[in-house]
Image 1 (tube, rainbow, N blue to C red):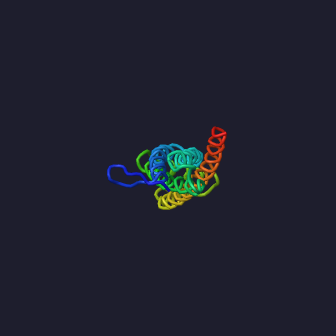
Image 2 (tube, rainbow, N blue to C red; image 1 turned 90 degrees about the horizontal axis):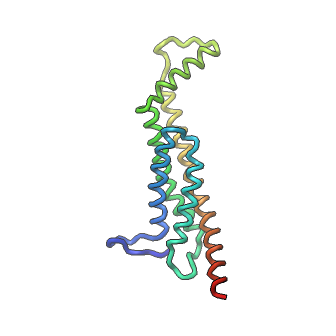
Length: 172
């Protein structure tokens, strides 16, 4: 792993790539967590591919990295931590600030009424919604980390192979 100095701090290409795409993933998943959290894995796929390619492209070692899939997977995993934080924070904001809890209460009351369950006003326990929110956010976040790491590893391996073929073609 190539390590470069930036303002007195040594940072590898893999770490730089993971942190940069982790910031991108955090903000995009924050927005998607507020609007439509189920779409975060698709966003994770895009950022994971970017993190993997950047990890290989920023590696200045002659001949490329020794194990590009590992480097891309680590970069994608680092970016996945940002995605996890973004989706959890986005879903909490959606639920508290933007009225998601009120909508959930209305929906559950309508559901109970539709199927003939009598639920007197004030007996709805919203703590179950918080448990569901936490479980959903954590599951989506962990799934996102896995997608980012896998996409990063695959993209890095493909990019390194294609880049190696291009340099061989230029040498001949």
